[in-house]
Image 1 (tube, one colour):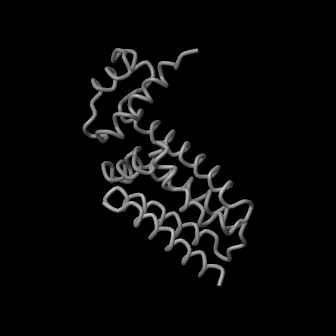
Image 2 (cartoon, rainbow, N blue to C red):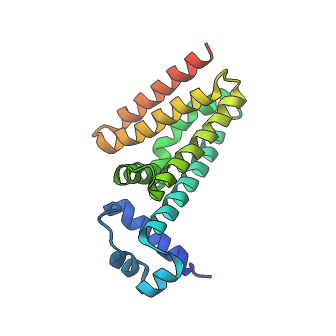
Amino acid sequence: MGIGTRDRIVAAGRELFAKHGFGQVGLDQIVQQARLTKTTFYNHFESKEQLIREVLDLQEHQMREAVSAAVEQQAAGDPRRKLVAMFRVLPEILDGGCFGCNLLISAAADYPNELDPIHQAVSRNKQAMSKLVQGWAEEAGAADAAALAGMLVQIYYGSVLDQMLSNDREQSFANAFRAAELCVGSAFA
């Protein structure tokens, strides 16, 4: 069975937003990419902003699932290793086309007002990643799992931003991995 209309719209938006940014993509481009009419678009979404929120939620969910699966495999059941394994798998996650972090960072920059529903979607997505990492920290027995998760997620998103800006991705990821090791090491010292 073929891809549904709503999914085609989301896929078109996702591709265009990742390639050109949220502000540079208009509704005409989205409907052209999805090969449908504006009327059909509005049968599925109230606005471009609603589409952006759905794209962000989809990206974050896919990224979190990919990270979780890769971390489980990398850590081989060791709860502490999970906390740094997320940094080992980040390059393969991003290279595998899961660019949820990049879209979240772009959305946070484009929609800085905390009352904006798109900014709120970004915040929810970051909280979901924090909850995942906090679960690993609790499983590992961290005294302050919430604080450790907060620091690791900050390093995580910072490393994504750094690799977007850097000419040396390998060094960017190596720095993030080392920072995570130091952070985790001090949490269990």
